[in-house]
Length: 403
Image (cartoon, rainbow, N blue to C red):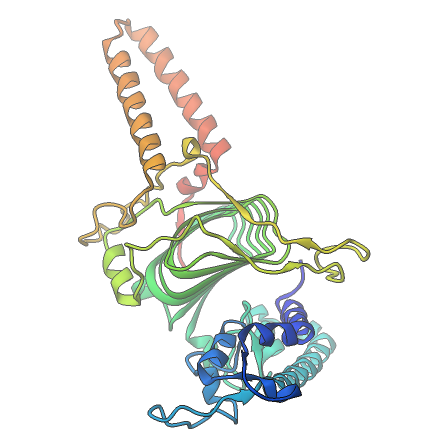
């Protein structure tokens, strides 16, 4: 798996290569000749903020010289797409150059480095423009930004819970966690999951976007306005999202399903960050682009361009609710999943509930002596334990750890 700095540089190079096509999708046609016939308004220019950003919370149009300081009551005049293209390429080139210099300096002094988080931060500090990737939320020349982001990194075979009081700033990043359960029961603006495997991650309420990259066999349970999934394999996404899930890059065997959990403060957190539980587009994934055959991180050279793989809907018979334990006796008005289940999934849940009641009734009506009762209990416990391991739910029994 590439390092975050390498991935950042790779993504910027990809944008550099395809920016002409991206701008052509955003540009409006006007009367004119040549480069003057395609223009971008400040509003359409802002859409590029999904891919590029200078600093968190700063609109992209306020950074660009041709739109900065424009009067809201008198919108700036449209700008030729060619001018926007040149400006973006100049900044990407400068960022790639600065990142390369930082990487070289880091490699030369790596033996003396002792803090991996600081080293990672230094690898992207001073970049002028960033891809909106896990490292893309770094603010140039501002180490304080890292103090405003909560990092969960390197957990293995454990459970971790973070509530609102544990979160610093508006962003959460879950990096390189394995065979664990991570509970983020708090409202945030941005959430990043990067390089995780065999892990269940609950993201309570995300007001802007969730980004999931380079993960394998991960279950993501997320309530968010948007989610972007890139370069993941054999993952299941239980989603409550107001916009279509965006799927890019080299993905394989992804599944999507409706949101399947709740905790007492979830409803309040959704309102706080502006996520509408009445809108859920979990089953409308949007696949962007094709797999690049020249992408050395995804494919060997010579592979033909193919449409990026989408996600399939989880079989309703395999759908289950996810129970979040009540560790701290937290109080709140949310007593059930705020997102409405589609009828086919709701019917499957009812069917399982009826089957469970029948089994419980049959067991209660059995006339067994004490020895047979013990044998039955032992068999049920053994089957339950096998299910815990086979389903991955054994992770929920790991002892909790904090930071």
